[in-house]
Length: 227
Image (cartoon, rainbow, N blue to C red; front, side, top):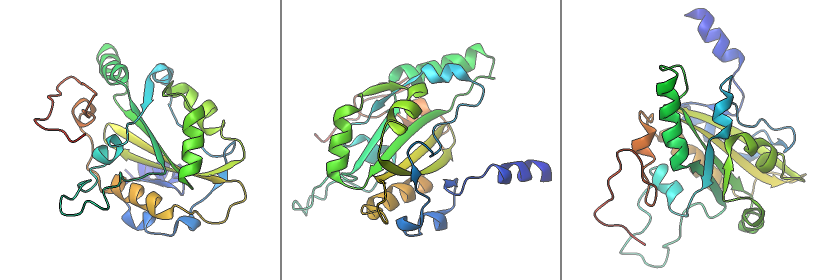
């Protein structure tokens, strides 16, 4: 047991967290920002087939729902009905990926990973988010995320955070311009990180990723949906 603990500690990145709320309470300016070509990307281990699995850009309300964020709209207050995380772009597993993970796990007699990846980018401003969204594809194979999304952001710095939550691994990247001091959207970043930390482990991502407009193996549409 002692050897296993030592191995885990050896590979622990300063921004890699599991269930340490105190770590995300620090000011965003204390996080470790690196040039986009130096920051760590997604990790796949030896299961290279997972690189062909795709993720898609989340719709505005899907990330708050996945993070179990507090109710979006308060009927008694119609003046502040803003969608949370306006500077954030997230990528979620597609239907194909959800099914492929289960098929791969079955075909390999349990040796293939069932873990999906969710990638979240928190930008320093809404203007930067809008500009990047225009050039990023709406859907992309996991194997191309490092090259096209992370390394592709020239002139930017990023801070990377990794959270393992059962069947889902969350990668959160804070993005700012090169040479910037601090992080102007620290509140959004802190809210995302705290929400991820507070999540319980996803035991079955086919159920937990059953968001509106995304059918899964055991998804039943809700009786009412807000549009």
